[in-house]
Image (cartoon, rainbow, N blue to C red; front, side, top):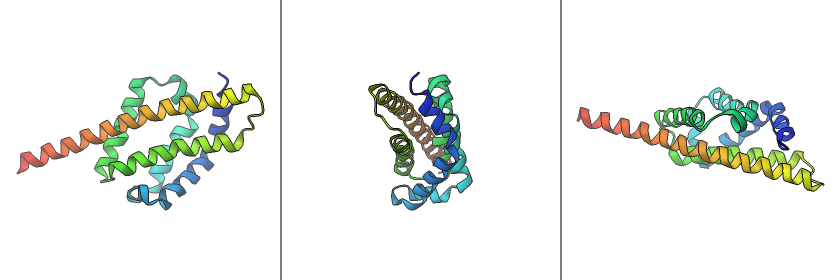
Length: 153
């Protein structure tokens, strides 16, 4: 895979990327609900992605993504984080990676440009699936909460 060098670069800078992303979350009104979540929890989730990006892009199955991100969606629902804030946070997580790749690479050859494009497409696919499953998990948690509330009433 041509993009593997770029993935290793991301993994090598995972701590800095996670810290910078946390600052973006905390300073954005579009995901301000994340301020309810302990900073270490957010940092751990982003590091999990960034440090193990090659696994997430190449080794993890759709079921792996579904399991992990449905759990994240359920957790965010239980923390009373607005779904729009969850969606925005995942969107800027992907954009943050794409911006890093653009900053750190010099696509001066067609092969380098192809490598960057390959990685961007893989990131899009991964984050689209992750977002879908996080939303499903969130919806399930909300439906379960509504069902338990109606049983009490």
